[in-house]
Length: 615
Image (tube, rainbow, N blue to C red; front, side, top):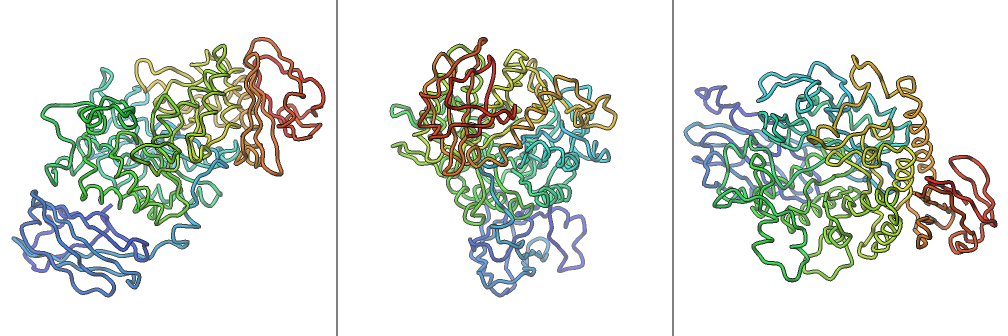
């Protein structure tokens, strides 16, 4: 979005020239806690002339920078607390003379506190790939003028037409099943041609090939649709997480097609991919070369790797994150490919966001196999040279641990061991926990299409510490492996399109097995909304006996007992062993069966079951 006005000082200036000059951020606000603002101007030869600012109360021109590419100008401003909303004017003189008008707006009510509420372990996050979830506006299925206009639901690598309006239309459905927070894969513009991946020509339907940070993709509905969706969610008491990508952009991003500076990217003599080894950050014996390749190596050739040490690029991305948070009113950020980013940049952008939005939630996608690796990339208790400040991470070790606990003999001991290493984290409740996402095999398929095992895994997800996240369609038993590509785990939600033969958003569209699990999932998820122990409570667990895992979540006023028995035979457990967890309680209520439980007697736990007892 380019919400500025540019007009000619001389009548000879053509309207065609006006459309070629862009400014980022497109507008800003008075009253921000950080008074610094750096504008990036992009237009043909605009750096070959002079720039001056007309006097404006409370705003001071600090400096002007012209890089080697004269199609760019960077303007440093100081916007004091005394500045009022209005329009700044800049006089630009060169081969053509123009006046640029730049708007400073008033901030939304709440000043980043009451509007941007943050996401906590009290929430339940629902991850959506908009193109695959629901088509709420068929008029934007194809947008002419973009680099690809492919739309074919029969082609798994094409765009399918799902959009933000479709998500907005399903907020009541999500809220009904206990969801409090919507996280969508990136919604900003992906104006890329088809890229050759997995042996196929693939569209950027997933959103991770960004070509303009300030425009929501028009095929998703644009900025207006996004603002309306966030506002609607907030009016329902729900929250929204935005997906960020700082490590790279699409090869057809406008600033890649016209690089501002030579060091805008991580450059190598020849193409260099990342080694994907997070150990280089905390390994005391690592080489500088291995670390440089990890951070500076590219994912794939069509995703240019950004040099986040470049201060002008860093300012652009930091200001964009603040701009999106204020403009759209989002509550949190999930940061893609977190561990590949320059470490100091990540700390700086996190600090900047928290300064303007004290309740904002940020968790980084750090795909690590060990708690040590995960803990390194968040606030931790480690003695390491660099300390990350992000609040939490996507907890892959716990994801793998929950899967193993319900699938493999002895898997509960592994999950116990992983949770025992929470001592590495400052606050493990801020980690995002999950069973699957858009980059992983569907959990139902991983579990051999066993609904009983899926119930056990879901029980863990909704009761273990952390911010739980479910992937769209899990509640109606969507399944598949990533074979032959990721597209197989990103299939359309049945019923999200008007012409779909079945609609699994409603009970009538679900087969009995799907409806039974949907009801089961909803019951636990909605119970969680009323359980302080499951939302924010402490954890007390016992070493598994015979692969049966028992743990408690508790606060001073609420206590829940959880029992996982992944064995093919029932198990008997004696209450005598769990006296510390029971805390003197003699009776409980099984929240699934609604039956009362005598806690003074030996309990028989069914095979392949997950039990939740409210004490």
